[in-house]
Image (cartoon, rainbow, N blue to C red; front, top):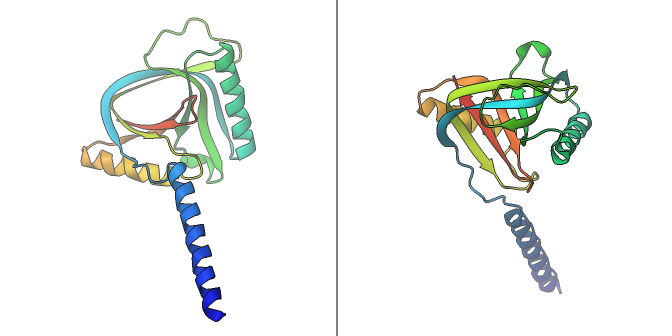
Length: 179
């Protein structure tokens, strides 16, 4: 009787491990995360700048509003968030510019009401494509570490901001730009 309990316990544990690993695999948890070095470029982002205490609900609401503005045609381009390293605002606060980006610098003659724009340029881009589900994606600290290591290998310093570009299929790419 005791052997049967041990046998069934082992079978249950093996089934649970198999389910967990297959779920992790199907969410993209085993997909490699590689930093690509790309040629420099310019980017114009049309949107709004925020400096505020970090709150996921507010951030998610702003993302949905910006996505809706892009889907409706009010903003043209890809949903983009530019995060700025800002030591002066405190650890629990965040500084970001959210909007739609175009991968070339254009003279912005007419902006939709309530929006501003920022222009960026760089000689070199460090980029990671992430197709994993949000539950198994590398965290932002790990991404920053990977980017810094690659920049050191390339003998380059990074600018004090980074881009997150969100695609329609829920994947995203993260870009750190060289000084």
